[in-house]
Length: 131
Image: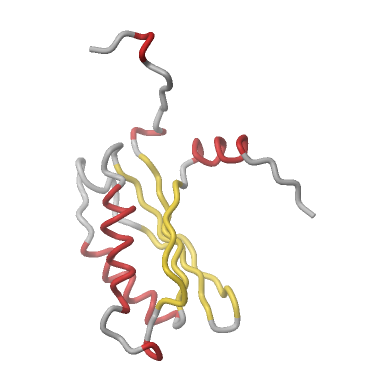
């Protein structure tokens, strides 16, 4: 039990889950997407794991030889490590045994919160005016 005076902040999670995104930068669109889809199939789902299977939200050309792919997923609070660590490390390990010329990743992946509440808090905290 905790007295109210000791509670400094409370966060409400939309629909009881935390939405996270993993930004992946690939050298080969088709091979990279296939590898990410194989990783997604291995991720555990259920009430205490991922709320739903991870989803590839979009893929777009980033530069002439780099593709940007976004994978999103939802976890119950406290299970963010499934995406932040487990999936993130799995993506990073795609190139572990490959020579530099055959690597799929153009850059290391990035993980961030992607729910509407996190977006609002970020926009409120950072006020950048477009040029």
